[in-house]
Image 1 (cartoon, protein in one colour):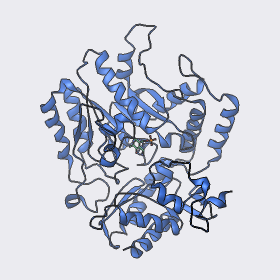
Image 2 (spheres, rainbow, N blue to C red):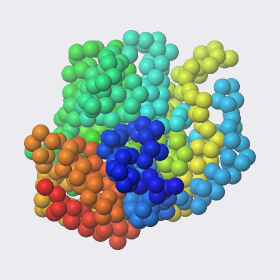
Image 3 (cartoon, helix red, strand yellow):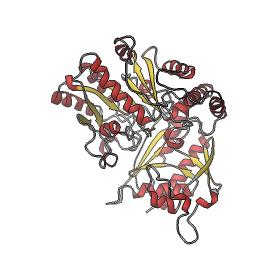
Amino acid sequence: MVQDLTRPTASGNLPADLEAFWMPFTANRQFKSKPRLMVSAKDMHFTDADGRQILDATAGLWCVNAGHCRPKIIEAVSQQVATLDFAPTFQWGHPKAFELAERLVKWLPDGEYSHVFFGNSGSEAVESALKIAIAYHRIRGEGTRQRLIGRERGYHGVNFGGISVGGIAPVRKFFGSLLTGVDHLPHTHNLEHQAFSKGQPDWGAHLADDLERLVALHDASNIAAVIVEPIAGSTGVLIPPKGYLQRLREICDKYGILLIFDEVITGFGRLGSAFAAEHFGVMPDLITVAKGITNGTVPMGAVFVRKGIYDAFMHGPDNAIELFHGYTYSGHPVACAAALATLDTYEEEGLFQRTKELSDYWQEAVHSLRDRPHVIDVRNLGLVAGIELESIPGKPTARAFECFLKAFDKGMMIRTTGDIIALSPPLIIEKSHIDQIVEILSDVLGEID
Ligand code: PMP
């Protein structure tokens, strides 16, 4: 059956079996006329419906950090499904959720984060974090602290809170007035001052001071939280300038504003530490994660909270539900089993250390593309890179998308956003794969208009 779906029928019509699925984040009409279907995966590669090996230069969607179809995770999921397929969340629990939370908090510096709240995706983790932040102020008698501050070019998933604090026009513009009481800091990306930076750019820490302007405008007593991605991924790998996150932390501390790091893509080793917070040496009050928590195998998201936040909620009446929030599948047994096996895999294989060891090689490899046609910036950190192309006037995404299609024809999956190619391979990558990624991209850049 699979073969029937790979190409349009001889008459040029779509195979009927492609029609019913309304694909997310996809140009449906374009895709369905020439589908790209993956049917299996192993380690660094997918196999497509034509039986071709496709090198995964994006870890799926920034999630398959340990590579695809890892035996330990498969085994844990299979066993869990057969043992306890579901446990209700409402006034019930199951041991693996407790075990996982205990294990996760130990992955951050000593005692900094005491508790973990589970959901099923990055978007849900973000909604949970925003709600916890607002409710936290309220239960402490500071109920006027309701405003939320995000950032231009921030991406925090697709639910209403996330698109409100997010700063990407196409993600917001069709969906009405969104949350009220939201402001945005400027993004930190500036090619005039930062082009071809290796690692963190030197220029841009002062942009954090815009938070002072918002405090002056609204008064700190009305502001609940600031949310940023340490590295903005979905808008093209924007690496934070040196000192920028530290400045945000200082200003938040000064005014009692909670700082939330959205680590949905930076969590679980992408920069060589378990979390970007550790890498940058800046501890936020809440951290959202997803994707790499289960190696992408089963949906799961989570929020880490600092001890004081959880404690504040525990000071109410003894028999009351302290936070009326959660999901049917919060801490789902199968997701917990997948996550525990994923953590084992990261640890046993030393994958975060491996990221550290490979990051210099990665840096030099991606920067070797700087003189290829159309390239106006290359940026990188850990095992992430962004390659920005000069746009064709009036067609701001066309060039990178052409690269995407040509790379697929040559057997490689990349991700593009605007005219930026974003690379984030599985952390099991070998130097030979890095060479292959660069070689294919170099060819592709030479072929496009
Ligand atoms: N936050 C960030 C920083 C993300 O990169 C993403 C997904 N790319 C999300 C939130 C949303 O995650 P999900 O798609 O799992 O809802």
